[in-house]
Image (cartoon, rainbow, N blue to C red; front, top):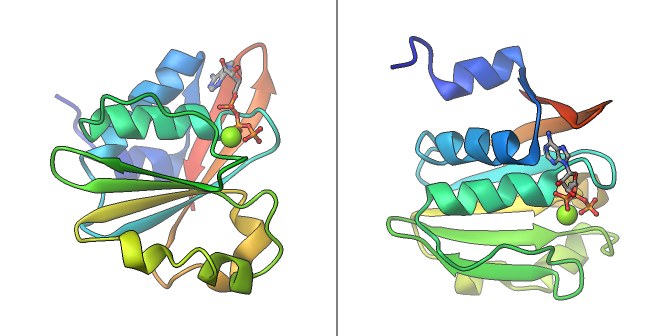
Length: 147
Ligand SMILES: Nc1ncnc2c1ncn2[C@@H]1O[C@H](COP(=O)(O)OP(=O)(O)OP(=O)(O)O)[C@@H](O)[C@H]1O
Ligand SMILES: [Mg+2]
């Protein structure tokens, strides 16, 4: 048993040495998320944002594979206890583009919105949004941190 919560450990910063480890950290976080939450996943191309969401999905009891939603912008998944909306804002330019997706029409509580490239739609991000940063440290290592 861990003596500090995953949220606290992520606030300190966790180092992952593999894609599997990143997914495992995300799966652990899944169980600690507040009821309706938005997770802004920051990080450069290929640093592991989608990998993180795949772990999150696994932790939420979602069996379907999580792939990059770059082309369809949004994927919705039904978990055992909450739904997961996975979005990639890479090709979006403004909060209006996010509004146009009418995400709220598809959301029901409890949910988690996992958003890649959140800086593209910064004005859209809801209050209380959790900002998570993935930094490539080379050789398969990633620093994962919540701010
Ligand atoms: N420690 C690690 N954590 C996460 N991914 C890792 C790690 N080490 C290596 N990788 C590899 O890095 C790649 C991360 O790809 P992924 O699609 O998750 O990144 P992304 O941030 O979503 O990229 P994009 O900006 O294109 O959406 C995968 O090929 C994964 O196997
Ligand atoms: Mg991605």
